[in-house]
Image (tube, rainbow over all chains, first blue to last red; front, side):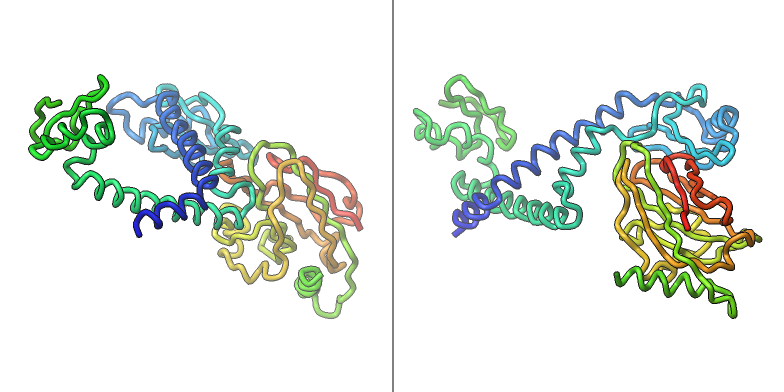
Length: 196
Length: 156
């Protein structure tokens, strides 16, 4: 029953879930990259000081925004013309364009809507729901085969391998298993002990 | 067609009583290649004192984003009834939006100003992107916007 629940949605959603997962994985790199690239504020810098610095460079500043990555963006009007830039907090001057990265924008549109606007959003939402069903039914399958949460990791390496049966008898106590030179450093084994 | 009729109805409502004369006006907005998603545009008119007089067109279907059309939003309080029936799709970078509607004669050469507010996802909001006085002499003269609009013109 669980296997059927895992197999059929899995086959149906294969392409969609693959696309969703790969584009999502690629997108997840950008916030990390932004964190590395963003000019960070020195410790103890107050909002007032920062605002003062930015106002000295951009007198028409309208809004200052801090992203979770620490990147500070200022928005201003220069004689009616709107402008925006990433700010170097040390000087208050612009340190780069505030416009979104082209690759990221392309990936975002692929990931959220397949370039199909609202229709695509619904399709991707269905893909995300399929992913949830697959993850839960997959976890249930692993649990049943491994015989409990504690064997989640250890069993996976040894299952079906040579000598795994002898080893399997000793898992019950919770141990570390070795197979074909690979060691599963028991993420779930409470009292690690070498066996096999 | 339906939206065109609604446009007619609304813009005719801008006409002062007794001055029902109106003429078809074509508004052409060409966007620059700013490298972003589709832009939301609000086209509206203010009277000689600068007060909001009425909306002509709203390009962009999701009202939750209208707050980024800052000046339009401030003038109308985000009232979507102002753009009921005169709403269309957002306009992509480098694309042209062309709408034809009947504008009351009383709006021309009387100090009324046509405004365009623009906003793009994850990019700088640009209220008052274009502000052109409505004059018969100024018709057909392209105006450059501040950030997203490469040319805007009204033709009669």
